[in-house]
Structures are given as structure tokens and as C-alpha cells.
Image 1 (cartoon, protein in one colour):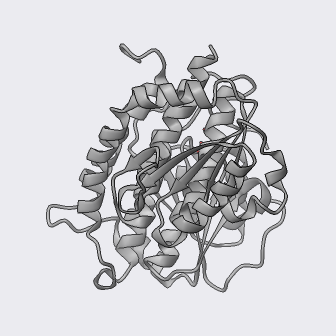
Image 2 (cartoon, rainbow, N blue to C red; image 1 turned 180 degrees about the vertical axis):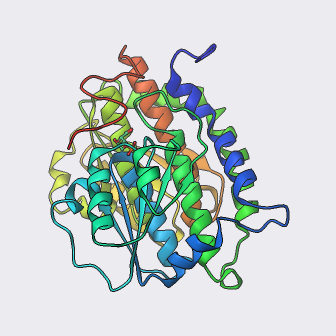
Length: 355
Ligand code: F6R
């Protein structure tokens, strides 16, 4: 039931702080230690390489999680689109371990990969929102995302749940004495901070109406983990508003795509990584010199006076949990402003059961 909400998507965006709190309550025990069952952590630790397999928004969550496993836990990790992996399996490491990400647990492309690696005898973990789904049942291990039913076709809270649960797993297998943050505290603060961003709805409605509603194409750019969020931001915008949107690694834009920038083309820059922000600013300036209508979403500690939207600071690799929220709201209000059915965009189904 969507209650007083006009669309499920807005309700689900609003529920994101609760989703993080559900995961904190479920996976941290009374002593503030992470608990997943020793087998899962042992398998991840013993693997010499992780393979994260997913599609669409879940793939974008994987691109964030892969960085956490590598940078926090020192575990080499590859992130693959399931429909590609299924028909062109890369050479595998000696002791691979597979992590499947899926809101529905039924995505045919991901199921195909799981079937293949089961035949090959490899072990796997599924993170899904639907207990007893196919990907839940057929993987060696499974953990619930606890996001609650996601009804809108455009995935929002499941992405937040996936990134949060990946962060918990990566933190649990990392040598925590080498990390300079406490994950439980960081995630608790993020839940509060998402609430703050969601409370700025009217800001994003206005920006969406100015920037995206009249646009025919749009760009999101960022470096590092911000490039992963750019892909997700662009997917969300195009799927519900039908504005052709691209997410780009900011440094790559000048290698051809810059030709598409015209007077008024919206370019949104995401900047949460201190060591890359200056470079992204340079890339954004190149688009502005060609007439782009720029909008910046920047973490507080690296923000400048004329930035457009300031995000609270957090651990750099957790920043997607914050930076994705303005992009969800921008997509929502663009769809709304164009008079579209936000929850049921054309040509799409919630669960993609064909290959
Ligand atoms: C986009 C979206 C899709 C799904 C994709 C995978 O908003 O919802 O891209 O993320 O179809 O679905 P799951 O996660 O159910 O495997």
C-alpha cells in the first residue's frame, strides 16, 4: 500500500534509512560485531578472487561493492554483467567465490550464470531481497537484503540494501585494525543523513524541472566510485523519464563524447573522492566551455562556495549511499514533471525472466 504517496518510488526512496537500520539490527550483534555465519566469511577469505555477478542496478551496486572488497579487504574482485558472463566466461582464478546480487532473485541472466558455476562445482553467495527465490535456493549460501517489498520498477532501496550489505561483508573480512573507521557508526550516521537529503525533495523537484524536464539528453560524470554512481544515476533517469542519459567516467568524456555537449545540455558532476575531485572539476569546466548546464553534487569537505548541492561527509567508499539519493529524486521528479507513470515505465517489467 502506498498510503499517501503518489507513487511507490517516492515511498521506497523515503524508506531507505529504515533499510539501513534493518540491516544494522540484523547483522551486527549486541557486541557490535558482524555476524554472517562463519562459513560465508571463511569462503570469502579463502578465495583468491571474488566474482560479483548481477544485472542493471544490481550490477551498479556490485561496482561499488567490488571496490570495498579490494580496497578494504585486499581481495581481488571482478564485477560482471550476468548476460555477458553467461556466454563468455572469463578465465577464472584457482579458487573463485561468486557473489550474486539480485533484488528479485529471479533474473534469468543471473540464474544462467549460477547454473553454470554450480555445474563447475564453485561455491556462491546470493544477496537478494526475496527469500526462497531461485537465486536464493540454488546458491551455496544466501543472505536477505531486508529492504521490504520493492514495487516500483525502478530499483532504489534494493540498491541501498545491496551496497550496505556488501560493505558489511567487506568490512567483516578486512583486517579492521588497518581501517580508520567504524562501520556501524558510519552506517548509522548515513541513515540519518539520507533522511536529511530526502527532506530536500523540493530542491530536487525544482532542479529536475529546470535541468532535465526540457532536456533531450543528459550526462552524469564522476571518477572512481562516483563513476559507478554515475552509471546508476543515468540508468534511473532514462528508465523512468525517457531522457537519453549517459553515466561517464569523467576523464573519458573528452575522448569523443564531448562532441555531444551543446548549449544547455545538462551535465551533473558527482564528487565525493578528494583525490579526484579537482580532475572532475576540470572535466566539468570543459563541458561548460561548450555550453553545458552544470550541476554539482559534492561532499562537504571538498566542496567549494559555488557548488550546487552539498552531501554530508562519510567514508569515501560509502559515499554512494548518499550521492545516489539526489539522483533518485532527480529521476523521480523528471518523470513526474513529464507526466509519466513513474512506477510503471514503458517496455519494462519488475522481474526480467527472459535472457
Ligand atoms: C533498474 C532495475 C533493473 C534491475 C535489473 C536486475 O531500476 O530495476 O536494472 O536492477 O533488472 O534485477 P534484479 O536485481 O532483480 O536481479
